[in-house]
Image (cartoon, rainbow, N blue to C red; front, side, top):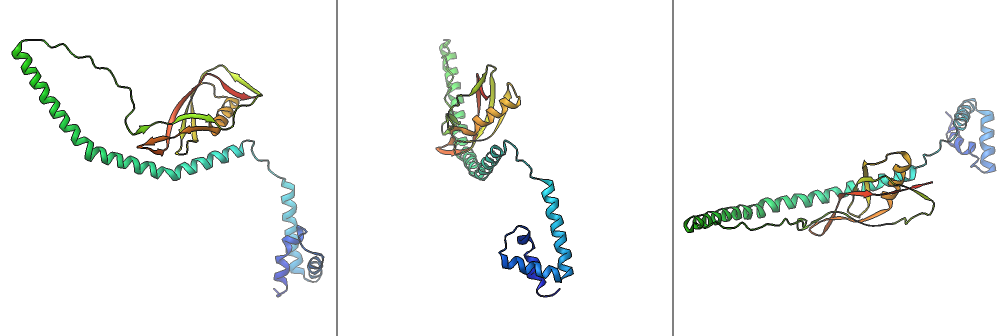
Length: 230
């Protein structure tokens, strides 16, 4: 191949796209008139361009933007997963090395007290009335689940509402945004699923916490009516 052929062939793409100035286009045309090898390769370029034009442009899916945003949210959550795992490992070490010995000692002490009380009761021949115990529903200290705050997108006026109840389990990252969700029960048609997906995408939560540090978590939401765009 002659030395002049290389720069000419490098301009084939720009020539076909009309990105060359007038002088450069004349140089390419003049070379093609005198070089059969470059003329043959240029014909192949034109054939490829014609094939691509005939194929046309593919339309992007309607929900492509939503899919990309969900994928980005999942990727961010995956990068933060190591922080949550480290916190859980520290909690397990704290539980095994610190809390569990106290629990064992507490159990031994409680057993000794029960034996002493039983012995005194037997000696005094008196039946002690049992003390009522109330269940404590408070969550474990240092841990909290995600809590819904508001919807960043607000509400739309052109919406239809279905009366069927819907139960959704949402995975919330450490920033309080949903990165994945599952419909546990209720309608699963395309319109309802799209409305739920849009609502989850714009929902803002107070993230789960472990000793004051935000971590990923999950929450179950129940809707009495779901807004579906008409």
